[in-house]
Image 1 (spheres, rainbow, N blue to C red):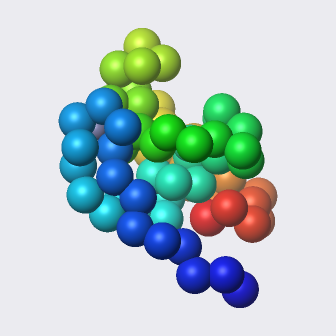
Image 2: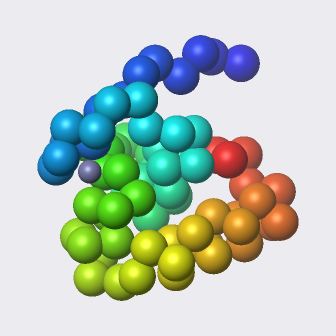
Length: 68
Ligand SMILES: [Zn+2]
């Protein structure tokens, strides 16, 4: 499996986004996504609560999504 390189948040500059954060960006924006958001900025961008995003991550994990 290809090593995921360190990704920073496009909006706030947070370093080394987690695999969950990167996976969520890919899942919701698309795999070709170039700019990644941390959980906090992504929630702001989508105008939903961070708790909702965290719940989504858990849902995707349960579904066995390969991005997580
Ligand atoms: Zn951020």
